[in-house]
Length: 251
Length: 254
Image (cartoon, each protein chain N blue to C red):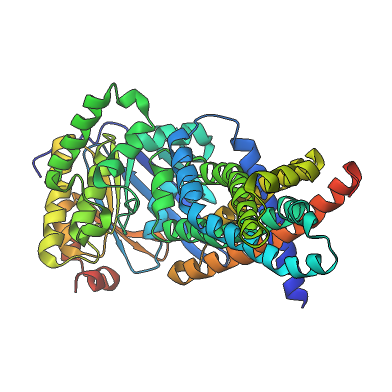
């Protein structure tokens, strides 16, 4: 990776001993994580292992039961609604389903978060410039007046990424960014994630099942198994790991 | 049986809590005025044809069905006052509310449930927007205002339908017909009718939003939500109508 990560700086996300259960189903049982500015971290795990729950806890969509959860030096569990909304401006979230607003055009989808944070939009021409820049960053300026129903799966993922980028977040949380895509489009998305990291110096957590995506887009990987971070290292090191659980992800 | 009773109280409790949240948030900024106007347009304008057509047919049918009996008793001159009071007091508000429950309530329920399933509501939440304000406050306020408006429209069209029948069958002019209607209509007929229409509108909006916003059963749940929204809001319309009649009976002698 061409970018630099300063591990001496305080981490932008710090999680210690995170616990979360849904009834009797204990999903996270003491999960730990640190993420630094400019770093891409891939989290892999079986379906239902709590990967998506983890990033939903980080953004405050799911309440945690126990543990420390610091995002940009703020304890997410102690924030009120207004403070959480302010924090969310700095933390982008890319949904697995893209979650574009069906009733709005691509332009309106991108304008939606900006219009609700007027301090970022000085005037209408500035708004148009920001929308154009975000669409150019994902290479889809021509789709500006399309409705989401007219877009392919890959295009939807790119537009959703542009909608996230338009707020200039410091952290981006990707929930299975390449799921449901063909290998070629999936690779394009992985390359795009790396490009965004280099251009905007964002920190990212990438929840994925896609080995190629983890290899291309991550600086570091965590294997989430039975609610804890079972293994943690770079893709290259984990790929040659002898442990049976870790090996099962690379086979 | 016991499960049904438990479910009834559970839904009643959750709906009350949801309504309380509406009143806690409706008066405080940010105000989503543009979305509110858009919803008023969708709810009002898009329901106009259906409500208008139903109102016209209602007036014509009521007059045609009643006319022979009134002629038999030599009381056909009472037609404008009888139809006027029946439509303004009861038939207009209730039938319009039931139509709105079917069209608007189901639409809102299905739309929000679909947004919930496809994570669009979560997407609003993580973008630092309060989805309750953007989706629920705007829709419930719009239905609360637009249903009474549609009731007034339905009443006027319905009375016009009745006047048309009287003109064709009895040679009564529109001017005479409406002057007779307003001669017998009192403020005590009109005010309770409009007030209860506001409650009908609120009930339709809040039930549709509550069912959609709390939908959990995936894509299967979208259809079920629309169906439940219609059933619950229609039932609420009748309950509210019953309460309204009891209350107006206290203030205005029927």
